[in-house]
Image 1 (cartoon, one colour):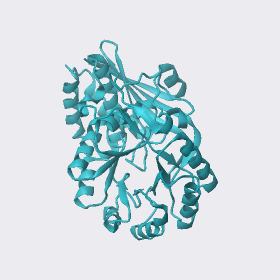
Image 2 (cartoon, helix red, strand yellow):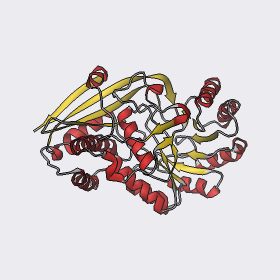
Image 3 (cartoon, rainbow, N blue to C red):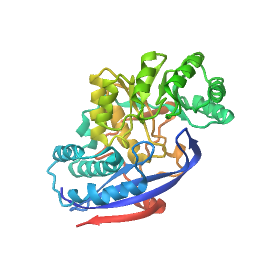
Image 4 (cartoon, rainbow, N blue to C red):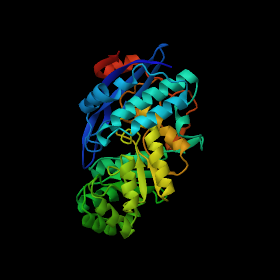
Length: 378
């Protein structure tokens, strides 16, 4: 398999409803799609959702990194099998900085998809064999309006979710109104966890969690700023509920720092922010070795390309406590693949057993939502 060239697409897809939290609000998702093209005409597709408040990347910086640094060394490369490509990608990862990880993810997924299709293998074979046939995803409520939140909670109960994550903000009073409205629409059997998206200080987080005990929260995600490892450690040591690291966790170096400082109980692994499948699996194994749990996260607005990559993590990594994502047309007005990764009733979704990443993008739909397309050939 020889890499003949690439296409880089910037796409924007409207969402069915707005999503907001302490760091951002959006009604349109802005993603980057990479298409890798082999000399035999085969194509593979990858995706990233760059978020400046996570890895420091934007759509424009991703395109620049792809054009200037990541894709040029790959042009003309030949790979004899999937393992050969995985070795190359693992080596290339050593030179990737945190503010390049989403860009690398899109390129990596495109190449793994291409190699999987070429050699009739699952792209996820590079991270290990399947360990389960199906997985169950959580619901996510991301609004600061208690009335809307209550409606979402009722809809999620009827859909059959057993776990729900709620985005909360700085104000304890507002958070109480929000959580009460949600809990009023849910039976005790449905667990709640919250995500503060860096909204608090360590002191405020501990005060809020003490007063939120009545809601029996399963976890709090990213209560303090991404670089506040000391604060994360203080909240973890308080043992009020499990602490999930999200914005604090993007790279292998971040993972080791969190472990060394005992700064969380759970790693939130999102394929886009973590640099692709291979690096996500490496972070997962580091967590397991340290006795930490893991959560499969998702970027708001990812299409079925990234959702498929996440599905592989969920079905090939045994110690995943919660799964998020694969919301597909439940969130997006339109998806860009012929095969949808949208979860079914109850949040259930099946393992992917098709070659490559496991979805076939519809180029007409990509072209419909593209804002720019750049070709990269020798």
